[in-house]
Image (cartoon, rainbow, N blue to C red; front, side, top):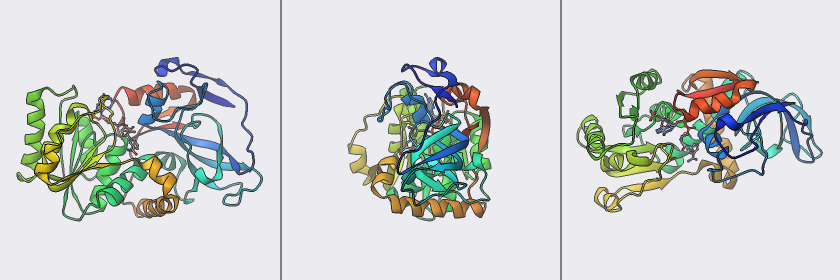
Length: 332
Ligand SMILES: NC(=O)c1ccc[n+]([C@@H]2O[C@H](COP(=O)([O-])OP(=O)(O)OC[C@H]3O[C@@H](n4cnc5c(N)ncnc54)[C@H](OP(=O)(O)O)[C@@H]3O)[C@@H](O)[C@H]2O)c1
């Protein structure tokens, strides 16, 4: 089969596209003919050796995909040949075929197309868990989303609206904020694309306070980190929840804890992957909810950019270079 391979830990330019052996399912595993895959920020980190989980070398990158089951191993009971599925595999998805344990496979409704299914799992799964289980966001509360036009960011904008919040989207360009407004954000503003200087940090806090009538945001969704987290936390409402999602800006911020005291707020860690492993049934329920929302037209994954499998290294570079809006899809 054809696949993208990581043979040394480096940037996307060092990935190699070519022929590798076809995988065969063992007991408890299924073979998926991949139809579409999507790029996530962890793919960018994993090929450089910067992610918390690292597969042995060489490996095929790509955390998630959708496709059709074409073969099942001994003892598989939950899936059948012909099932349309999406898979959270961790890696291995930028290829024509994937072998995976049946527990990692989720059936998709027949009306959902493969690109949409490939782009839904990680980002909407993360954001629903973050807003529902972790923040317990309430109707009428204000949700501020940083990096709001990115994969997880845009899903948080849509789910925040579904859950009755007033959503403020923040992103690094006018074009990105337009995408956020098109996906339902009530307000959107542009922040600088560079690491924020002291005065720019103050401006960011002031902007959030201005848009929340001086009260601050009840829930802050932060997939960016770096110099953006502290000014956002300074604009947190009393008893707010600050959701630690990720560090796309590169640096892991160190936050002054007096801010948590002064605002009576919570700093809440969100590690969706670990939660899905500990509470698979809860996660399945969340996905049923997401499929219902999709069928009702209430969530609508943004697929702004599509690449062929042959060009999947460019697709990873596209996300790494901050050019992506919503999901980057690879058509296999
Ligand atoms: N906690 C969890 O369970 C979980 C699950 C999935 C993903 N994540 C994390 O969430 C973060 C975002 O993932 P994603 O897949 O949504 O990525 P993405 O689509 O690339 O979005 C990331 C956003 O971060 C902003 N950003 C700021 N500085 C950046 C920089 N130097 N390089 C790249 N982007 C930068 C960009 O928005 P602007 O240009 O508008 O600033 C970009 O749209 C990652 O850190 C990822 O590891 C966490």
